[in-house]
Image (cartoon, rainbow, N blue to C red):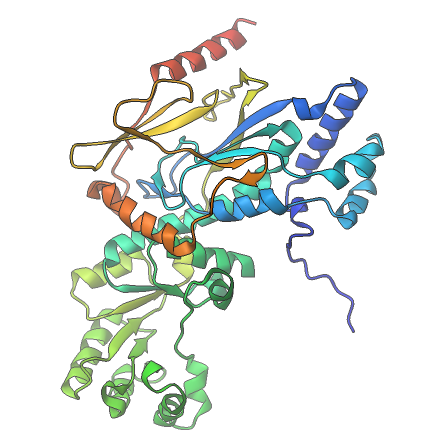
Length: 461
């Protein structure tokens, strides 16, 4: 048997799915408190996670990833293996052995968490997650939270753009083979489903998250047989009414004619190359002429929101779209500027105002205000203890207390239903594919005053 390491993240090692400086800071906190004979658990820090700016051509974002964050905070721990690994790192030579013998073995996240609901639309500089707890606890959560939320929010926001233009067409996430890791493939399926997709090609996402997995066949299946029709016959014999035949291996229109042998007894045909608009029109004509009017047409091949919009605008008779690379990698802008910043320490507001990276201090709330028709009007970013504006909805709600989840986590279908209802409240001009809107987000007078005061206090020191 080969002795090798998989490199996979699992519940026993995910506490180390972090940047090393989180651990050096944590050990330094512990040693500082030990040297000064104080209790580090009494020092309470509050961090907020937010996105600094939009990716390219976006006018809003969709929050995703909270369920995985809560799993991490509830289950991550230092196993004996991870502790011994850290103990042997030379950089920790001046850290008291009690850190490894007593503190880490007993460690469990003891944090309070407030968050927006998954599937909510939001804008830059609005906190989407707030974490409060002992500084070691709150600090070490940073990297994992950013990794999960940045990626799923990026993909959910991309998927939302596609859903906006595809309207009632069936949307399938096909990106696993081009995603940046097997886990990224699962998270891309989850994030796209939240934003209204109907299914995925990813089977793990079906097994673990109950997102329906679906697929057709590859060109290799057709090429395995000497005759294209023989491949169709073989597939149909096994899958009958569930069959979706891939008709573009050699000649799309000839493949469509061969598929007509099965009448309306197959589910559909798929086109994966060439001019999809022209091919789809000709294929639909062939199908209809041969009594296959109920056979659907599925299209794939590097699709994105712009290509799908063009097809919809040209009344292309495509019933379902398989979207892969462009979605799972957010190809037009594959990064998102999510950050996690300390905003309060032992009830004292903290601020960062380095160039182009200012953070608003203090624990905050985001209030959403709607117009008389129930449509989004504006968001107000304010200090948590300010008076609630009339008819405003607070977006940050408590989801965890002392490391324990407060209420049942919504399942993936409940999250999707919330998204589908919530996105209707966002005016259509925010949903344009080009960047045209400065989001209507206001900062309360008290929050701005606190920010200005802390800046002046620093300058005058």
